[in-house]
Length: 483
Image 1 (cartoon, one colour):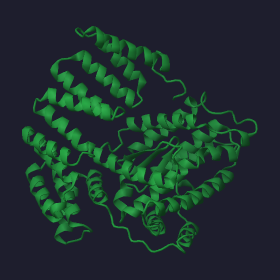
Image 2 (image 1 turned 90 degrees about the vertical axis):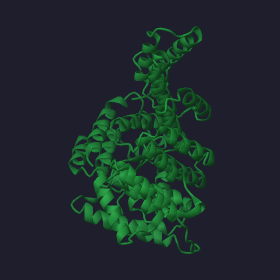
Image 3 (image 1 turned 180 degrees about the vertical axis):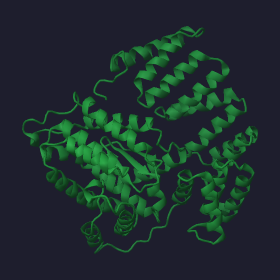
Image 4 (image 1 turned 60 degrees about the vertical axis):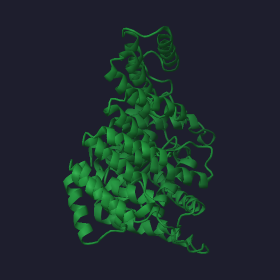
């Protein structure tokens, strides 16, 4: 998948200009200066806006929730309590993960699929958490004494292009950064990789995962890189896997007790879900039917779920329902929210919205921690014309999760259906605020004020919100200190 590479390359070049007013002046003694946590967060927020606009985020609620649960477990074990973390999936079959300043960690779906065990995936996330907690980007700038604009823009292009395998883009970026010592940059990069490996393995162990998963996954990744990127110089890869790194990771295992950690059901189901998302639906159906017939699977229930999900994505809803019942039988009495979410989604796609409401309602009550089931319930209630119930559900969850943009977007949809355009624009504005698109947010609030109807309190709340955003971001919608 190369669409994302073009967008991210454009992002990196844009950042060369937009970061100019926000980065520290490193013209003097760089040992005394660095990116502040606020500046790191601003860089990360700007990058996330552009990545979101690229359309390559795997905005699936179950995948997002799983990565953030796993990530939170690792962050707690790492002791990085001074940093905020957000984990997000990128719909890309390449095997990669990357950290953006400010605690944003992207995980390619290809990495989840390639991981044979949950501990392997956790080892990569632990490594990326260490990059963030140790402020490697800021330390890179300090240590290399680079001009910050050249450093960040060129390094950003190189990293993002290397994610997508774009060697030409990296070469151009390095040429544009003439005047700094590339070898010095690489020395720091390797040192940071070793530090992230060491801290990441400690995190892995403290979180209760198998530390041996790190060198095991490194070896598989090295083989994968040789097969997929044989023509790319090693320094173009964001995480060069060398024999020394593998040997170091294996050496750290001495003295540690053997630990075989079972995979969680969450991991098994999410892995099959993203496998289907990154394949063409027809190809995914063929894959699951063939591997099930040959009994080539690690977990039968998860594999049958994968087939059901592939059939659902292919539009074969009756076949998906049948395959889902087989997955439930294979799992037994334990049950899992992923199976119920797919069941409700299938019934909703079949136009059986009342039945979908029942499935989602029962499942959401049984699995109260699953926000995906709540999204499904609201969508089913909306499809069934139960607007008041859906809005009440949204209001309850906005109180619980005030930063969740999804509830505001769903509210905007319902208000539009009801013809309540002022409320619809207001809700859409709040959605944009939560995805940090401040210009569109203010435009929505201004549109809301032009709509007929609305009582004094609603109008006052919209005007107050607009004034607040204008004061913080400027009337053009460009936040101070944000690209």
